[in-house]
Length: 157
Image 1 (cartoon, rainbow, N blue to C red):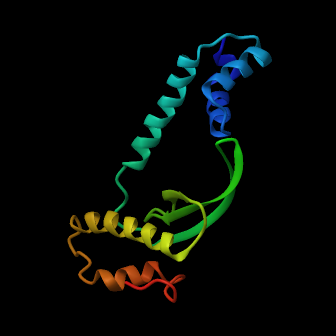
Image 2: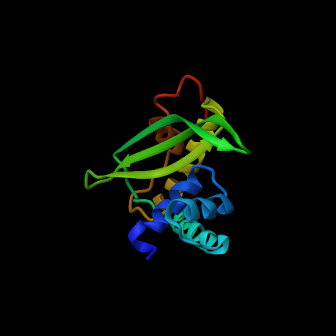
């Protein structure tokens, strides 16, 4: 009976909006007249977290000819209060011309210091990949300069 309601999708959506497992449990009882345990809701959200962890640990491609860096300001609920937070995005175009989200990071505000930490993460990931190339990048300072073209005046290596 639960799958016809899109139970997993709705559970994850409500959880992402800041509802607790107990709040979600009450919501399903009120809206769908279905009793589910808070433990079951936790299992659903944990399954999503497992998928997220697998995505975060996936190997990146060796080459991204184009990398876009951007930050979005989103409203987030934490401890009952709604706050603005910055979500940093690294979007790469792979050799097949397909967009691939390389990573997401969240911080209180957007700033050059956090961008530097994002660049360090990308640097380390790409540095590990370059060891597998037949022609490794020898001058990482110059290569990182290509990534930091938008923030070159604010970030030094």
